[in-house]
Image (cartoon, rainbow over all chains, first blue to last red; front, side, top):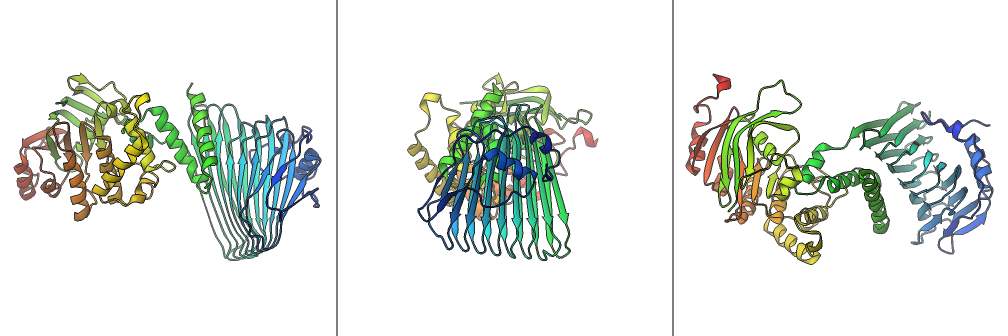
Length: 333
Length: 255
């Protein structure tokens, strides 16, 4: 096997040892007529993980958003109901687009990937919603940004699946800007590892990571945040925040901020914390008559909100809040 | 009429059992229809008393009792105490994102009502709107996240908004005047005064006579070294403003 991406504390190699579940159903894409969908990827896999994902997906699709696209209809990518999948999204120069990919897939040993390329001057608002019902998943979401491109990305991790999730952003062009917000709810006996990587290859590029995770039951959640400023990326900015809230005595959480700085003229920073439920907030809400169960739900909602604040779709937000409530009710019982 | 009784109350910080008691036998009775002011130097147990009455898990009652209408509330959880009629306006209200102010206040009102008789949304919004107008709060504060990014003054005003919407029998207001400019102080006082009546009793913790010019108390108590050492009418607060606390008899700890 070719080299794998580094995912501290997450045994990626072991996860990939099993043969990937083959693709059985296609990905659905809905968008304006100007947006084209073609079979195949048209690019090579970069490493061992991508080899594995390609093998898993078998077939894959490419979604192309044309240059200077300015349509208001979001590009909606919905993963198959069952089986692995791979999607490449190419956003042309100076296009402005909202992308949403939703995964409610079932299956075992799934591989899925979304590869986004944002050309120079383009602006992308991206929402990734993982609500996978599969048993073991390796998911790779990656974005590369050209000069002056900007990406505002939210990842809502509300899966029932265990596995690894790699969220990778490469700032290739000068002045590229990306913010990645991640909100994860881990419950039951889930083992989840998130490696969120932000690499500044270009001058004056700005990359921010903000990860929030809530863990209930006997779940284990690992947050790796890897900020990397490559030599030559003068004036780059790389910041990250990783926060984990544990609700049960058997819940386990890791927040690992990693900063790799190979250039002098840059700004970079990180913050990380792993905490038990906020007693002061619970007390405040209960002092107004709210039951402990309701107060807990609101506190958790508030904690995750910091990772999900950019989601403006009210229906989706309600769905997420409902998932939080259901998860906690199950945990309380 | 309802009565809140504090009887021979002794309190420690739960995590510091080796430390001496903070409250050392407090006796106080507040009836609805009355406003009591609790004054005294910093670090002498005033906030501890309010927090203990509300049931803050940080504090442990080692002796004595707290009763509402003759029933001990010591075994009640914080939320049950709230539903029994208590309200604590806090010195440092928590900030909670993801929950709007309006949503939270409605949940607090509904927590007091049976499942099949929740407050109708239009009635709630009308009431909220009126109360916010009284407190001169901008409309968007209803839709902002609970205390998130509120200034010190906005937080205090928001505590009074909750008080007026929830309409408790007993309000404990812990330094509701701290950090307020004179206009904000007047507005907060207007809100508290609007609650006054036969169904409302208040215990106002403050360092300053200034607040009591706006909310005139029926009784003033002075707490020192975990005990109430002096009780009088509104005029006691005025004389304390001139003389300070130092001439009052020292508690045993100073002896």
